[in-house]
Image 1 (tube, rainbow, N blue to C red):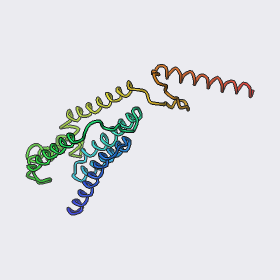
Image 2 (tube, rainbow, N blue to C red; image 1 turned 90 degrees about the horizontal axis):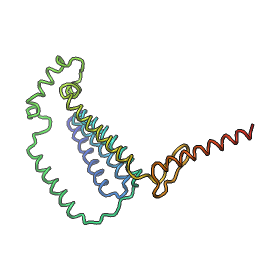
Image 3 (cartoon, rainbow, N blue to C red; image 1 turned 45 degrees about the vertical axis):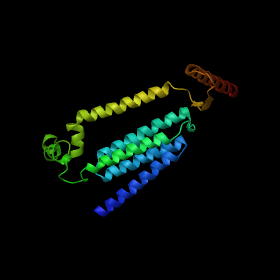
Length: 224
């Protein structure tokens, strides 16, 4: 792929990111917002691939477009998809976002050009990884994989532990949160009444399942 083609792909992906971000801000439907956020993460992963950061792209696609989207959809199943109308003015949050964005853009002014061989990131351990990983980590042919799995093994393990802990925490919060309006079990939808506890719901589902078994057994005896 030529440099001009890479620039065209970068521009297209950045435009898609901008459009998706604006759509997330404008929508009032939480389900649409969650799906657009997943699309945003997927486009970001594509942008990372173009920048040759395949490991970061894999993480973004798995966590941003995968696990995060699933957890948010599970949350919407409990709280609903309609956003409450804001009770405060949006001027202050908008001001904070503009100031923060301006500071971040200003901070990028001193970043060295992307891909230059004399960048600081290429002057320290990068050369050692490229030249010596084949001898030191001979069973892993890919340099990026050897860095993540061996040289930065403890760091990668820590990142995985953080993601796993966050997922367990969210699942625990969802499991102890309020019940949904209805639950599908054993081929039937069970409507959750106001004030019903989990134990009551489980008991009701067990009673209905036992009742269905009795009815099926009685019909079988009559046919016999």
